[in-house]
Length: 126
Image (cartoon, rainbow, N blue to C red; front, side, top):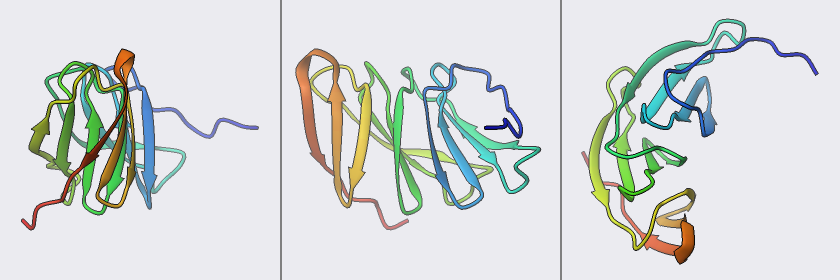
């Protein structure tokens, strides 16, 4: 294996999801970071949004990213414009949201001591 490049985010990178030439990073205290990876040798930060909690996990559904934001629950973020993502809605779960997997309109959330939460959501028509 060879490391082609590296981009040091401000926070602590916890998880990444790739969609085309975009990398979406759950970056701990720095929230969501969006990187343009069209040039694998020179990834660049395009945008981001700081969430209220500690971003530990994320999933992507269409033009939206859902962040597992620790003690702040889930955060739905519109990423249609990578340079200007914004929070659409937040949702509290019964314990710390540590990780997330999206399947259609369902979010499977790993919640610390409370186990698994299954949350139904719909992306708004904006």
